[in-house]
Image (tube, rainbow, N blue to C red):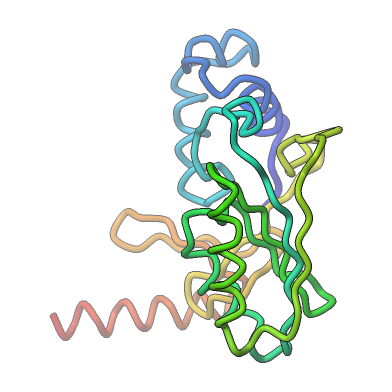
Length: 199
């Protein structure tokens, strides 16, 4: 699904300051407040906008950050990632293509780092790991780049496969669903009809 110029402009404004009101965004983008409200609601529903938060500096709060690279077998990597991501100290977790997991961890006390490393050593699927303390941050920006011509990667409402591009919009009981092709659209409509008939 291609983002139009207004979508991109709204995202850029929110990227710079997520605290602005719809009215302030509308003034900057030069569109109406209902347009901003509607577009943001769609972007939130589709998962492009995941939420709004303040960007805090852990080191200024007296905390320490540790980067941890974890190696596991490809078949175990997702399970290891999901298990470790439940730990409150893990602030970010990315699965990499080289069968590694990259964790961004924050700790309020030095002894908590040791406790975390001991817990990691108890995970049998972890083959090896390496940790390093952050001693300086050169750049720390949100990962998304807001540029013209953006398109969304969508999850098909029927087969749940990722797709990029227009896809097909299906309206069922006044709600819009997005699917990747006409085959999925037909299958979703049939499934919906069967569910309504059996209700």
